[in-house]
Length: 117
Image (cartoon, rainbow, N blue to C red; front, side, top):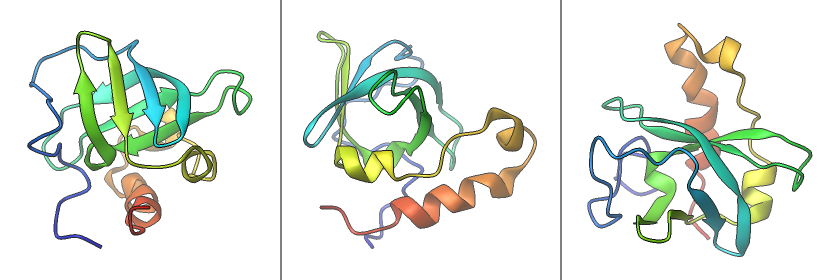
């Protein structure tokens, strides 16, 4: 595991605070996985929620900001450094469990703390 905080945006990813990336397409290392339905800029807890649509039957997955390798605002596309299978196998995002429960993100940190491909 790198020393980089999984909950922060990589300096070279092209993220600019305040930009609305909801609706952007999301590309895994091996293809398209869906669109962003929500994102957070919270310090120490930045993430995306991706609606995978029919790809894995409408599942919503949470991706920590540290998984983003590039944001292309012209193409409205976010590229992440995980494969489709890694994302498909991630814990499902549950808005009700997330709200008001700071420890909820720990399961995602453990899962995405796996070494990059």
